[in-house]
Length: 322
Image (tube, rainbow, N blue to C red; front, side, top):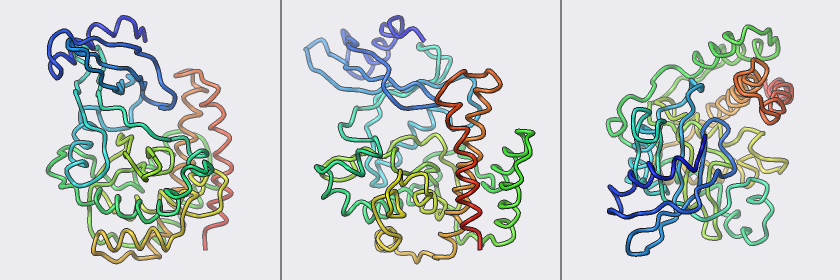
């Protein structure tokens, strides 16, 4: 995408928020975002005021994920529910001035790279309370009124991801076996809430004061709130560290924060089941990412490398099954 040609239409969009004469400065692609383009820039008003912002652009060939307009609505609703969220400045669909769906939000400073979050000595104090804080934030996510974000997918996640695996057309015996076992042992859902769908180390902006923002709502849906807690505990999101919750905390800390903030009791067996399902789901996502490369949809060394993680997740999953 030609970002230089995008600056003019983007300035026109921002004029509706900052007034006429606003300029776009330093528009450039930022790191991260395997399915959507993320850009960093400053909006400079006619009076010279500078506003650091982030632009996210949708991709035409990625079928999964909520539209960015709905993601913007999710961030607004999350902020109202008490979730740390960037303020949304503007959003639009593919028929708008940018020629692609987009959302513009304030740029929140902090660390998102997981290995730095887990090892930076300046973040030691924040890390100590991070698992509890994540529990509190997830309780706020699950308080979002579904009617504030209409149109979220309410399909059963187990059925959805099993269908995605079958659609690859490739035999995956370990995953197929694990999914059969998980289906047999599945705990009943006690209630349905908004689920972030990708709440993990890497999608949080962390500062010395803790979590400053929750990012990437593209996999949000309606479902069992235990899915979010289990996903945060998936081994892949520990990035080589020992603590089971994101590499920075214990199950007890996460559960304590969630139970106190939500007023509900966490079923430990259900949490374990959703952690195992999360490992299976991540394996399927890795397979999908590799398929994008192998089929020529998007030639990428990064996507190809992710494909080898399938076997790692199969091994982890088989070791976890009772």
